[in-house]
Length: 386
Image (tube, rainbow, N blue to C red):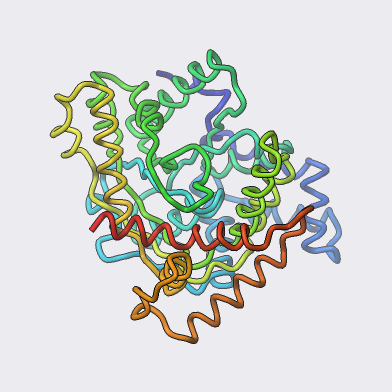
């Protein structure tokens, strides 16, 4: 397929960046946002400095290295206790392009942290990501993410529209990996797992196999899929997820607003995360060859299970995970994994997060149980994978 067929969803490319940048600077809302960061700097001078910094930028990768890399490292230094990659955490062959299929902890940072680690470790390019159009509520956000190697995923579609959108997105992912020679990051499921129990949806694999050439197994092989496990010590959005659990419990028709989505995004970026760890498994092409004789639905189910096994066994677990599981189960079975100081720290953290929830009929016991479950489930999945 040709680039023009993806114009409605693709990121900006070489030759389009200068105009995109000019349009971004001309956006009134974006200008107001920048003013909030440097209120003492007149608009004309501020834009002049940005234009000077933009000199020489021709591609989205240039933009990421010049503007986004220092921002992401600032977030790592200020809002985490370090972001680490395990031994042999990344695929060895840097000449290939990969589709990183990952559990999902943060809307923005899952791929951003991966980007800086790919650059740091000498890989020739970063990742393109899909971002839901429900988050692109202002023109400047859409402009900025397209400059930052994001393609658009349409949400809230009819069944017919969803089929067309999935076909287009899959074809674009294949085009990006095999013709543009870009890496892709994609979550293992639609949306984050609110309870932090990460399981691959067969529908994601089926979507990936809609594009490309050959049978469904060949199409997946072409993408060089790599299972990627992301482990957060603390999830800054845990209290927002717990809050949403109660809101849906009390009102089954409850739906988040677009502003709620933006609040989640902002909290995820600027909230405290503790330690963060990334670990890749080996590419799954060997498994695909082993399973390809299965009937199609059995193939997808078996492949999802193998991916989940790799994701779960590669969790980095922290004291809070074991503390949460012991509290839920009323035991001290994992007491060797934490100290009394760890317990006191986690209790203080939980109380601070719960205090941020301000909703009618606040159910403290239920909210606490929901948050503990988020921290306990990685241990459960890890133990099952062993």
